[in-house]
Length: 248
Image 1 (cartoon, helix red, strand yellow):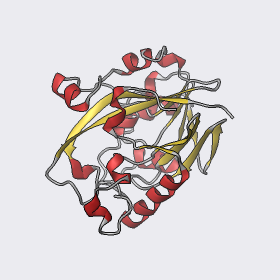
Image 2 (cartoon, helix red, strand yellow):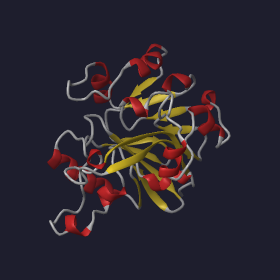
Image 3 (tube, helix red, strand yellow):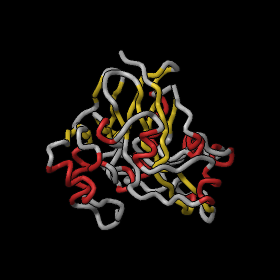
Image 4 (cartoon, helix red, strand yellow):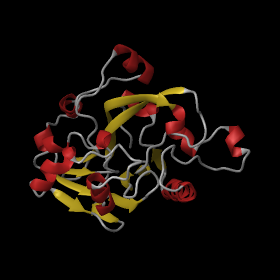
């Protein structure tokens, strides 16, 4: 089994109401989140989880509030000694636009995604404006898309699980590291979702579901399943990893 180090590369940001992350909690609080592409260093392939935004906002106030640099796709990859053409595989947590805007640059990559996400990208529900299939059309036309219709090991030391909490085809990525199994969540949350404040725990809630979700009861149970399956949790938009330090 291959052992990996996970490099969180900030490829964008969003500033919005915190309740967009924490379901029914934090309303009225301004919050900034990083948008990551996660580089999995190890094994015999160059693998990314998600590809981030194509044209990230890179203002000084966002950098300071986030606590780390914000990169273009090319700049971020250069930090780990790569160019877009070097990427062999992209694993998608989901296909909201901010997670796949640079797919077309990965011309040599296989792109792994749940079939439910492809359907949502092409035929989004009116409530979900975050899908825009423009960003995956090139990959589809080039025959790069690989659909993942069951939980399985994609590469030695990399296992994917269907976790439809935030979107119908959300997919969490479990990565073998020297410190144990790390889970990059297939749903948009921060660390507080997994470790709620005491007033939330006093309500007998172990986790807080994502702020935007498919089914609140199901999302809660999915979060527990992911939490209990990993030694290290990497919530998809946790600001703590914006310093770029590798995990594992």
